[in-house]
Amino acid sequence: MSLQKDQIVFLAQKFGKNNKDTGAVEVQIALLTERIKTLTEHCKQFKKDCSGRRGLLILVGKRRRILKYMQRINLEGYRALIKELGLRK
Image 1 (cartoon, helix red, strand yellow):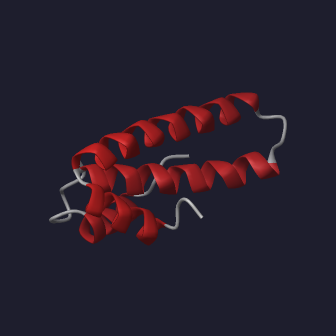
Image 2: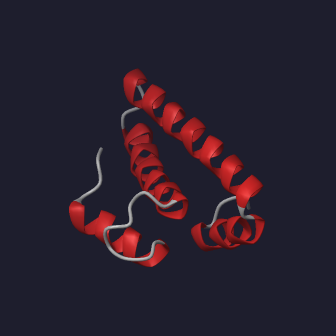
């Protein structure tokens, strides 16, 4: 369930400084969000895939920790990113 290279470059351009800036906090959160969306669809289709569900929960926890870090460091950027990605309805 990994992302394609063009998806990674697109998200890096959109949320980072350039297309190779995949280490920025905003880009990491955006990449995790896309992986979570694909895994969510996979788990809806294959309900008995326990290892896929476990991987999904691990990714959600990782994204939560990175979001907490970003909230501590850059509150305005955190709020903008949450709104852009459509998290926290």
